[in-house]
Amino acid sequence: MTWSNWHVSPFLTSVFFTLGVLTLYWVSFNWLTSWLRSRHISFDEDRLNAWYGVIYMVVFVFSIQMIIVGKNYSWQFMNFELIAIVFCAYFLNIHVPYYFFFPILLVYMLFDHSIGYWQSWGHALTLAVFFTVLNVIRVKFQDHRCAPMIYMLVGVPFGGVLWLWMKLKFNFSWAIYGQEWLYLIIFEGLLYIYVTMLSQNSQTRLQLAQFASHDALTQTENFAAYTGAVQYLFKDSTQHQRPLSMMMFDIDHFKQVNDTYGHLAGDRVLQQVALTVQTVLDANDTKVKLYRTGGEEFNILFPGYTVAQTQTIVTQIFSAINHQSIQFGARQIDISISVGVSAVAGADGSPLDFYNRVDHNLYNSKRNGRMRITSI
Image 1 (cartoon, rainbow, N blue to C red):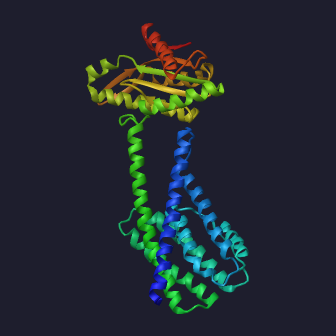
Image 2 (image 1 turned 90 degrees about the vertical axis):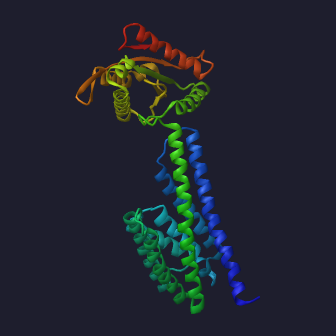
C-alpha cells in the first residue's frame, strides 16, 4: 500500500465519522424538541439547542479523550475536538465568559495529563481566543454575503497555530503537521456546508409548521393547533384529575362591521382583538393559550384552572375589549364581545362534549343581549 493510499483511507473514515457525529446530534435534537412539543412543554429552542449542544459535544470530546488519554498518539484525534469547538462556538454561538473558560480548560488539561507542558498552556490560550473570535464573527457577520469566507479566514490560521502547538509538544514531522492542518481546513469547510444545509432545512420545516398551526391574519394559533392542544389537555385532565377550563368568545355584530366598513376594517378589528387578548395573557400566565377557531370566534384554554380561577383573566379580557375603539382610517369602530366559560366535567366523554358546553354558554350570552359572560 502506498503512502497516499494509507492516508486517504483514514481521512475518508474521519470525514464520515465527523458527519455521523453531527447527524446524530441533529437527529437527537429534533427528536428531543418533537418529544417536548408532543407533551406541550414550553421551551426556548435557541437556549435548548445551546445547552444540548454543549452537553453533547462535551460527552463526545471526553469520550474520545478517555480512549487516548496518556498515549503518545493522542494528537491524532485533535481535529475531532477542534470541530466540536467550532460547532459550539460558531454554529451554536455559545458564549462562555472568560472566567469560566479557563477553569474548563484547566479541568480538561488535568484530565488529559497535559497540565505540565508549556505547549499545552499555549494551546489552551489560543483555543480560548479562537472560541471568542468565532463568537464575535458569528454575531457580526452572520448575514453577511462574505460570511463563509470570513469563517474560513478565521478558522484556517487558528487551526495552523493550534496544530503548531501540537507539533512542538509531540515533535512529529512537518509533513504530518501540514497534513493534519489540511484535514482540519477540509473539515471546517465541510462543517460549514453541512450545518448550513441542515439549518436551512430546519428553517423551512419551522416555517411550514408555523404556517400550518398559526392564523396568518392574527398570528394566533389556529383551529388545527387548538384541536391538538385540547385533545392532549383533555386526556391529561381526565386521567390525572387536573382542572381544565375554556373561554370562548366572538365579536358582537362582526358581520355588520364588514358590511359597513369593509373587510379590511374587519381584518383590522380581528388583529386588534387578538393583540389585546394576547397582551392580557402574557401579563398573567404564558401557559394560557389563545386560538382563532372561526371567523370572529376565539378560544382560550386554561390548563390547571377551575372556572373560578379563570375569573381574573376573563374579566380583564372582557373589560379590555368591550367598547374598545379601533382606529380605521378616519373612523372609530366600537366593538364588544360575548363570552362563554366552562370547565371539564366528569360526564364529558370527549373534548367535543367540553367544547359544546362552552359554546352553549357563549350562545346564552348572545341570546341574552350580548356583551356578557356566561359561565356554568
